[in-house]
Image (cartoon, rainbow, N blue to C red; front, side, top):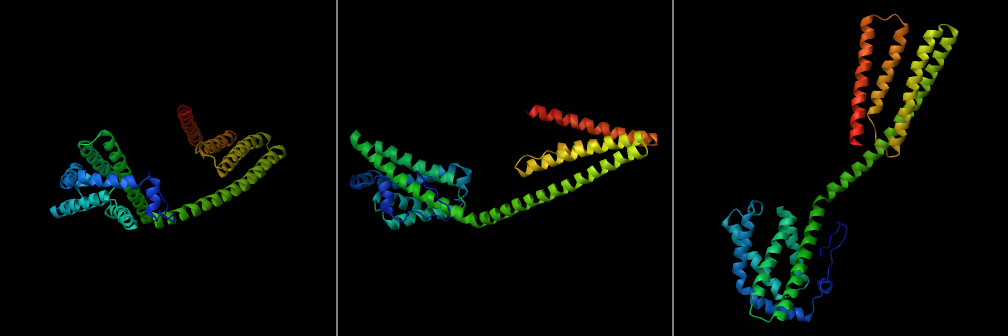
Amino acid sequence: MVFFHTPKEKLMENIDEIRKHYGLHAQDDLNLKELAQILLPYADQMADDFYDYLAEDPYSANFFKTSAAVKRRKETIIVWFQNLLAGNYNNSYLAKLRRIGQVHVRIGLKGHFFITAMNFLRTFCIRHTTQADLEEATKNDLLETLNKVIDLNLDVITSSYREAELRKVFLSYRAESVMIQWSERLMHGLNLVLLIGLLVMSLGVVTLLGSDVYHAFSSDLQHGVIKALGSLLILWMMIELLHTQVDVLRGGKFHVRIFLELALVAFIRKLFVASVESKDPISFALLLGGTLALGFILFLLAKSESWEK
């Protein structure tokens, strides 16, 4: 059982509370004394085996590049082993366990490797306890106590590790949160500005449509009707843009396809107008080619979307 804490939370101060959570009683204290008699003679072997285990992995071996570092690591693991079996679980012991977690954060050791190393130590202790010349019921009691105290150590150290890790990044995390919050507000404001701009442009397209209709009935009916049809297409696309923008403001997804459709409508309007105006063949061919190219791109995009669905 591991307790995770945010930087504002406070780790449990009282070792008695932790002992209570793990159900450590007077019988466990007696079991620890018996475990000490069984396991402490293997302390040096445990340190050697533990270093060999760490040296097998290039990542963990990288922390012990010199013989002095290896010697210090063996000494510290033996001291921890002795304190584990001594059973003097007071607030001073709790502070030492927390420092272990903080040190591992400071040297940059990943939490995963610490937990696997603790599993190796647990396995070592269980193996030598089960090999002791004791009754089966006694062995089970000793193993139950052993698992309790190892879990207690793992709990406190990993909690301290997590707290130190969060404290290390908390300032940058808070700054990033503020930046993200203000960026979201800015984007929302810009989307509102864009919506207002689209509304203004839609009114302009309505005015253009009215001008084309007036021109159709007042002077050139054929030319005016063609231009009015093009303006209607643009008005229809403006409505689509407004609909898309409203969806975005409500949290919907933005679609690039709408801009391709708008460009296609603009080319179609140009073709309408060019069909009744004196346009040279090259200009008309370019307009027609652009329209076909946009139509082909939209076709491919529609195919892609259907495949995704």
